[in-house]
Image (cartoon, rainbow, N blue to C red; front, side, top):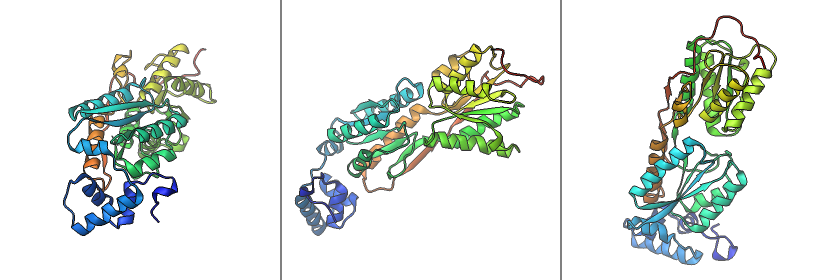
Length: 352
């Protein structure tokens, strides 16, 4: 049963649609006067709006009249150059539409994700572009999705039916692992992303697919999880080097920052990259080209992803009842200097 104004919850456009017996898109057409509807349908919708006490988002209606408005952007960490480039792409595309971007950086905290989601809901922004750092949709996000358009970028979340824009993580990861295998490495280790993040699982699946295609046992390849930050890459390499058995000759990391942490820790432990240890990243942040050796990595088109996310959000604003679309851009291997053919002589532990 549709809620009333007396049940303590602010009515949503979905509540109006249910009470009037029409689609969400039809309610949008009536509220925004964007398409004609029959007089009977118009009357049912306006009656439902009055009965529920529904207050349409005046900012979104202003957006359709080409007035400046605002959208929210939730990201885990602006110190990560990939997230910064993605945000820059979103701001560029929003500026072309004379729209303000409200930036919320969560620091990979579930509590801050929930806080900023509630805050954006209260500000009545026209829509939200959401990049989760936890893989867990807060309850406030589900509520927000009932009332405002949301687009997921880079990370997909369960339980929320929303458009998604990202790169082909799985294919990119397969290319990275295949490159390492083709250079002759037998002892390969993986520094994976956080448990539960969609990108981390997709990249891990891609690595394993490449191993299986080469006749390797994916389950025999060691995996140490990091959190997409530099320090976790260093800690992961310590764990791999300190484990029993021969040390890896190559490490494939699920993002560039963890690859950087692994390279720095290798140097601390007297290992040369790539002579003693080959390293591959994922993202192709600007730092990847500045390192010595320059980092071989998988290039995600961050700015283009930002542009596509804004386009998807505005498409949702124009037609709220449309099917959520999925946009997946290519992720390509950028071969540089951090991968070499392994020395055929057996290598023991590092001399630390």
